[in-house]
Length: 119
Image (tube, rainbow, N blue to C red; front, side, top):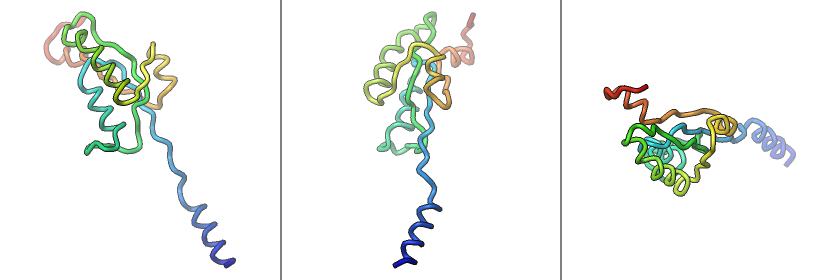
């Protein structure tokens, strides 16, 4: 019995502690990429689920000058909040205080590569 107790103690000390998920944040909520990332990281039922990271916060925004950005912000922001439990924060500084890493996913980045002029 003493040997079993010693063995169990050794096994429990050797087993790694469960690591906490990496907390991720999103900058921009104007593309379908944000809900795609949220599904992959936050939904364990997703066939593409990636364990070990979770999107926990997002900074709402996009480009007010680009209709394909501006007209989609509210819908994607609501999906992040309501479906995936992502907290919407008021500033990028506030976002950075809550996360371990940041994904920048604004349509303005894609607009530059699509030939739009950006000032």
